[in-house]
Length: 293
Image (cartoon, rainbow, N blue to C red; front, side, top):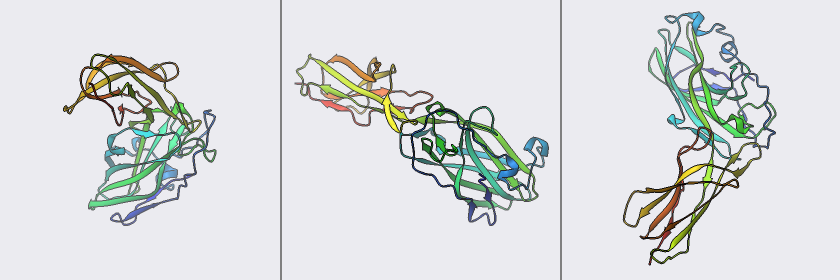
């Protein structure tokens, strides 16, 4: 598959070959053989050499590379996640083509995972030599059409991905870097909480329980997230900030359970600071308010 941008009139949209994203299906998690085309294929054969061979002075310059506004790409168990990537490219003769993708593994030509750009690129030209371009990438849980392209088919793909970028100048000189930077692609996680009894007599111990789960890209569901440390936090009624009460740990079933004396009216929550493969940071979206009498 060749995904290629064509910069005609840079002030308008750039056209890419269409990339359809089918609905997510469960995968086995086994590595999929993926063919990620190199610079020549991406740029339609116009430039076969890499930036190192072209030379620093002749090659376009690429800067301001951004993936998802600098935030980790967090993907759930079923729904596809579309995010924005952008770059600035410059060359004295102008720019005719640009490219950004994400890939996972050790070999950029045969990666374990590949997230290519979608079918449109939007560029503006602040000058005759420079373009600022944006495009989108879609990551879909599961193995969908078998080739693994655009798919998060294995949980092992969660973590650090490489960001590849390229730019082709009007004189056919080319910049290409498979290792421009790295970015996190993570599994979404869900954390619940319930404090009881409600209301509670002052000084009595509250029983505070919850469940910790995270997206399983191989099954399309959420599975238990075990043996993870997090904070039990409390926000006193009238306060605007939570404070740490203690550290707790999810069990082998993903359950979270602890007790603590009730002293003041206020809201309780569990707070997970995140992991390299999982949502960072993660907090309970809505705490549990307890009235103390």
